[in-house]
Image (cartoon, protein in one colour):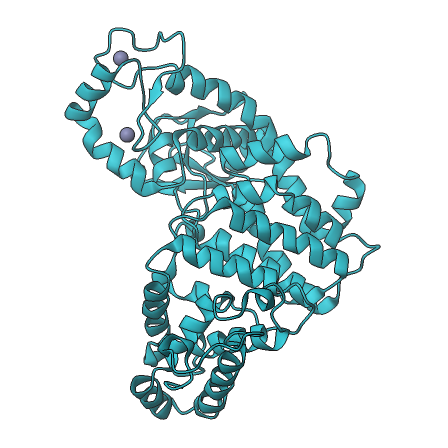
Length: 457
Ligand SMILES: [Zn+2]
Ligand SMILES: [Zn+2]
């Protein structure tokens, strides 16, 4: 392998195919060496420690297009692409031998090969999306997601756009395994990106339209594709994304007037979920928007500001967190010194949830409680007939149609029995999930008591 590897410069590139042949041979060798050892952890460990399999495979995986001649690059043979995917798959799923820390080796090698740029890695993923255009039974490389070190902090918009474009093209070709790969890659980007903009971009690039086409009865995608879970994963992420202001807004802009016949959508479980989520959240958007404008965007965040609450134009956002708005530079400076220095860093840490997302979730929860008032009053009476405890509402917004759970908390002691508080909007079990921002939301609800007005007996 040392002798053949394009990086080592021992073999002159072929004028027609570049280093295609060597790459193919190396990847074939890797398969031959690794496969028999997959269930022999000790020997596999030795092999990976004593050879340069890991960096070489990673290098070929990242630089595949570069190692081919210019003409050949446009149309790489599927054999090579498949081999590259398989080899990466072998490195990332070392059978029962998880104690080998193979993924960490691979992560280190990928980070070195991409110069530590997540964007570069995204480009690699996008180029594989492109190369998979030919129908094939390629092993999907979503295993990259199992490596925490590779969590991406940013992603170029065009990687998302290209993947959605390829997805659309594969659907036309009825190339189901390529569709599966593209869905898988899209889900990887949704999962590993810290920033929810990937979902927003995918919607703008026509992801939902493509999915609607894919799941249309006339097209009848293969059962294998549906059973693989790739489509399910994409629609689930899409639903969850609709809890976020900018994603919901993007979906509304794209599809308000263009939702294909709703009856058709409702017949397909995957799409019904998305449409139900959209419709359950949309009514909250307008109220949330006006509240947020009134109390955040047109308010100087500095408590001592003389104009607080009376701005005629939107304030200027803090570039660090984009959740605090100011009337002037001097207010921002004073607030920074007084308090914002700490809270800004915290807001930035929380990443994708902006202040307006909290307003949206709050409104979604309120609407959910308002709409279920009768049922809730019955449940409240049942839980605490004498009304001596504090009762809490917990709204699970990760469901397509939000659900309310009523909890009693005797630890709190008797309180104002007419008040029931919203304590959380996300399920406990999902608090550690990717969209975990419940601690932010909890703060927001601490003083947001909702009176459900017990009717007289
Ligand atoms: Zn001010
Ligand atoms: Zn800030």
